[in-house]
Length: 248
Image (cartoon, rainbow, N blue to C red; front, side, top):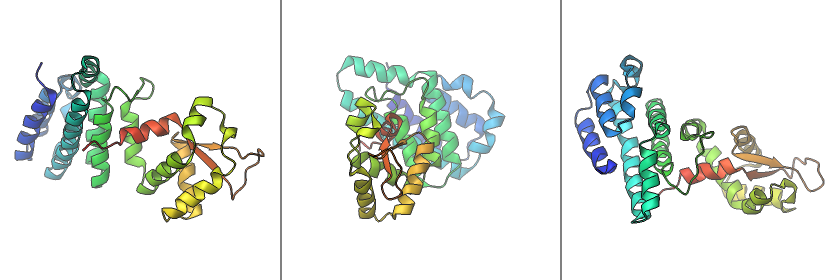
């Protein structure tokens, strides 16, 4: 079977060389890149505003090149393990992956933030990783939309909480009141080391709670204390960070 990354390289090179291509030509290139895209890209008029300018095309090329490089690194990790390679290939040809590619392309055209464009490519590639279970109810497109809405401080806050909280114990036991009695202070100290003020840290932590990426855990006495608020990552939060992993 022909490797998808070799076809992707060829399609991206052609697209990059002809950035003024019409929406029809771009759609056809993407359809040859990933066959399941063909029926989804049929309503070309709806795509015109997303794929009509040089800048937007270049942004999509950048995002897909990140995806391509990270996918090749993932395939190398899988090596000769037949089951893992089969799972990767199966996902690449699934409607769920098609939806994720379209979501990533749409979000890419809506931003000029190079870091976010890079992350869209990372999420697409890591979403193919058999070790990261993205369930039907929690599809990859929803994580892509989270990337588009979260700020750099949001991501720093999520990383601070994940690296500080005893997430492995919490997520196995599902008993949030089993947190370390110093967790709140540890979180604030970790935020301070990252030069994040306490109020800002709490603000972004509560924002992440709204995205389902963090959970507020009760204090040891059962009462909330403004100086000792505790947060732990949810399964979705840990999965979200895993989807942002860089292999190269």
